[in-house]
Each structure stands twice: as structure tokens, then as C-alpha cells.
Length: 429
Ligand code: ADP
Ligand code: MG
Image (cartoon, rainbow, N blue to C red; front, side, top):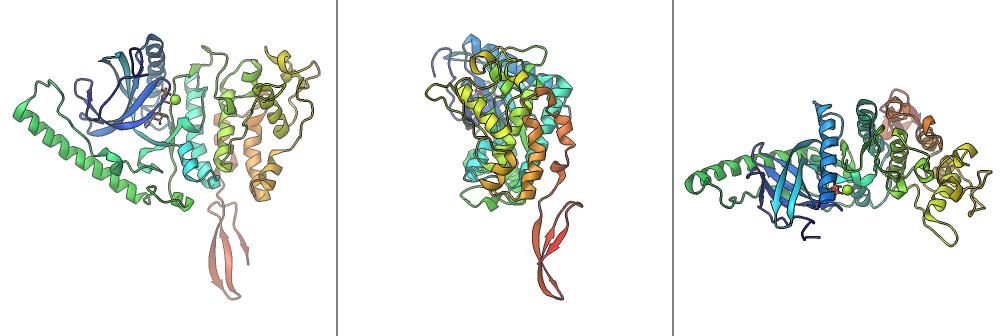
């Protein structure tokens, strides 16, 4: 892909936008771009530099993402809505063509890496709640504030804030800035040396600030394997990747969302809206709490991936109401006129509560409360799903799971459940 129309090859120390940004190390890549950690010599801080492939269709996609991200930034002047911030954008010409570049705030690992780091065990429910609050705040802002549907919510597209990077140490992995002298820079010689020295000093201070914050956050990461390493950390995150986002009243694609997070109305092609993001959100919440995806459909002999997916949804959530099942442009491919799947006849019905208790060893009360929050988001009727705004009001988000502490009393040592919420304080031996 490093050819005409493709990626731009970057070397550590390369400079961009007339020397303002200096490449430090690669952060990641996608189908459309490579993303680099860069040092911003103007703000003396780190940024993520997304360098798009150069062919016209990629340039077009980048322009779209810039438009969406600009609208997002314009409406969120305090940068408090848990959406990645676009700082700057420019064009960069290289041997493979002209590349649109987006300068984004530097974020940390994705939630997918967090789950991997946690050995695919579910996160503590209190951590799940913290993540939910960030994502819901973002979705409420996108949906209600801007009329934007993300359309591709999944664990890879939610990144932790960089100071609480769970699996990498940004300092040790080379974030002491590398400030190569830009080639052909008019400020050569002595002036350059002084500028460089000053920049290096500022950069060292910035790096020290980052390392200070990290240790005060409890020193996450590195080689530690225990999931206790997540204790006491304020898990905050932001939503990224707006390459596929659209406006509710200006949609571009019929098939949206990554397979496992795809909503029934998208499979059936009965039209989608904000509520389709809410379905993906529910899939994410399940995955965070359980450590496994909610639905992993596969095609088989005599049935397609879509049909397997619909069957799995019904096995977990109950039968799709007939009027929904037969109401989409693709319904005839999957359902008969009674609303039964044509090619997968015998379904094994279960329910979310029971799955959580039997398979995932939730306590009955946790399972019940969790299902009360999650269940309504998985309504087959999109209009019935709660909005992000409504979810933010849900009591489950403000429960705290009990922590046990030992307390001495007249009758000996008692284990006391200290709930941090007013609602739950109980005593037992
Ligand atoms: P694409 O549109 O090519 O899929 P993405 O926006 O998904 O590109 O970014 C590709 C990868 O780069 C992400 O999966 C992530 O690992 C990394 N990345 C993207 N944005 C940031 C950011 N702001 N901070 C840190 N890493 C990022
Ligand atoms: Mg991507």
C-alpha cells in the first residue's frame, strides 16, 4: 500500500506542516490511513497525526471526516463531550501523492486492548459504568446536539485518555520528543541550535509532566498481568473514527456498522437512525462486562451470516415481532410471511438474565440490575430503545458495587459491605 495513491511512508523525525509537527512513532493504522504520534512544536505537546492515503476516494473520505470532526469541535468548546478533538488539518505532498492529514488530540489504547490486557475477562461493573457515562455523554451530544449518527461504534473505536494508557507506557515507548532538524529549513546554524535546545527543554518538561501524572494515577501498565492493575483508575475514554459518520437526514450507506455490532434494522434494511448507535452501544456494554462479544454470527450450510445473526438475536432476546421481521427491504430473503426464519427453524430460546447468572457467574441481583439497563436498548423496535439522554438518567449508572471491609465488633470480626451509594448498605457475617 506504500505506492502512488496509497500510504505516505514516514520516518521518525520527519516534519509536517512547515516543521510544526515532528513524527515520533507509529500509533496505529487503518484501511485509510496511518496514525503517528507527533510532537507539536507550537504547543509543546503530543498529538496524533492521521495521514490519509492519497488516492481521490481516500481524500474524499478524509474531507468528510474533517467536516464531521469540525462540527463536533465547534459545538464542544470546552472539550468535555468525550469525542476526539480535531486540532488542525493540512495537506502533505510526498512521493505517493498529496495526503490529507488530520491532527487529533493524542489518546491512549482502545477498549479492545484493555479487554485483551484483562485476558478477556469482563471488567468490574463499576468500571463499565464509568465507560458508559463517557460514551453516553458523547452519543447524547452527537445525536441530540448535532444530529450525527456514528454508525461504527465498537471497542476499537473507543480510546482511553492517553494519561491512563493501560498497556503502553508513553514515556518508555519513546515519547521524549525526537526533534530532527527539518531538511532545508532556512533557520540553519546557530539559530537552529538555540531553537532546538529550547524545544528539547520544553519537551523534556512535557514528558516529565506526563510521567508524573501517570504515576499518580497508580502506575498502570507495563508488564503487570493482574487485573487488579485497573484498581482505582478513573477510566475515561473518547469516541474516535468518524470516517463513516453521517447525519440522520443525510445518509450515505445502507449497510452500516461492523458485523457483530450491527442492528436488526440494518440487516433487514428497514432504515436506521440514532437508535442504531444505541444497539451497538448495548453490544459494547455487554462485551465490556463479559469479555466476549454478544453476537458472533457465522454463515453455515444452508444459511447466511445474516440469518445466523438474526437467529442469535432471537435466541437471546426473544422472537422478533412479525411486523418488524417482515417490514424491511430484505425481509423476504430471511423470513416467511408468518415472521419465522425460513432456513433456521429450531431456535434455542434463552434470556439475558439467565445467561449472565448461569454462564457468566453474575449474582442474581447484578444480573437483574444489569439486564434492566441493557434489555431496553436491545428492543427490536428501534423507536422503543431509550435514547442516550434517557440512559444517562438510568439508576444503574449510579449504583456502586459493594466493597467488603472487615470491621471489628463485639461479636468478633464482621464483613461489612460498604456501598458507596446511599442505596446499598448491608451488614453480614
Ligand atoms: P482509519 O480511518 O484508517 O481506520 P482510524 O481513525 O481508525 O483510521 O485510526 C487508526 C488507528 O490509529 C486506531 O485504531 C488507533 O489505534 C490509532 N489512533 C487513531 N486516532 C488516534 C488518537 N487520536 N490517538 C491515538 N491513537 C489513535
Ligand atoms: Mg478505523
